[in-house]
Length: 418
Figure 1 (tube, rainbow, N blue to C red):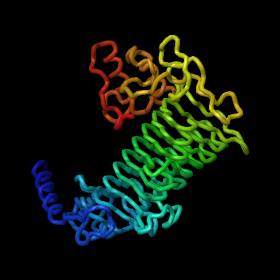
Figure 2 (cartoon, rainbow, N blue to C red):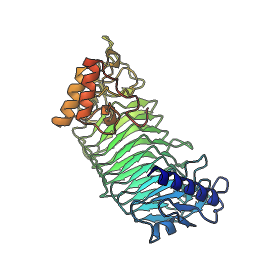
Figure 3 (cartoon, rainbow, N blue to C red):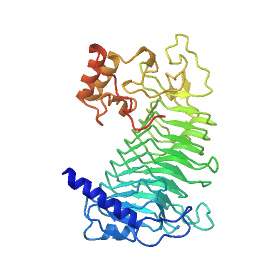
Figure 4 (spheres, rainbow, N blue to C red):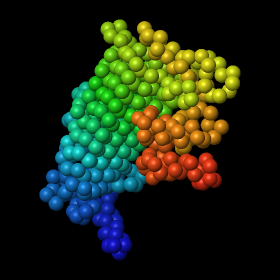
């Protein structure tokens, strides 16, 4: 088995050397020749779509796009394949040339990673190629979009209505337009959006993340900067978790268009936004949104808030009221006295981390796993043994650490830090 793996890797390296030699950046002139290698069959293709459509390309295959290539193409991924940019300094660029969505995913279980994705036209006007064109349009379930750079697209990633179970993480989205949406979740549910950097280096405009008719999505450990709306709930978005994000220098950090109900917003760092959070309920009301995780865990950090923390437990004794609301319940009852930091094993998110990981974290984890309690803060902080899941083994690991001088929680339980 080892011999076959080494032999395959050597052959594959030879193929990449043969097809390499891409053009410089930016992606104005399309590369010619071979640009894609099927790692499973060793076949080489001159377009990504040809590689997908080839009868020898089967579900589960790996298609590697050669680094340094400039590819003018729009593709539809209708097989459960992985499309990965060669892991080199110059990632390949896939440019849709303003003719439509750059990548459309229609099969389940697709992985897109390691690409630069853009929709460029000569005049480079914000919407010269259409308001709804996306870098990646997802129309299926259980896909993974990770470690890509998405730029110059009216919408970076669009999770289309009815889709579920997708993971969007580790991407940098900077569309450099006066108005755009980094990640759109429209009628899509039970997705995870985490560890993305969503910025607009041109000016503070557009939306970082937009939810409309979206439910039960987990949005955590993202950095969202320099937008009109960092995160906007554009009506009828319910039961979403917004946890442990850094939301900075936006006009509005979080903006609610009501009705959007039963959402949980806590352990986020709101920094230097013109308005940290706002509820627009002129036409309807938002109900039962929670802005903290209880007294033992805490709420959010709001820069500029005059906090009183006389007992130095890390939680303010005065509540933070959300502007625009007509309900006294719309407040963070337990604002954090300082910016929240991720610590693996601090399962309940307590700001008093200097008191150490203790029995309360074990109880919190048991409540989550067996009594439908709230998830760890964020979810991955409960993976104290670093095996990628939160389960009974993590309870045993914590007990062993606290009471029997066992190993401490791993330092990399989450794939990124804020």
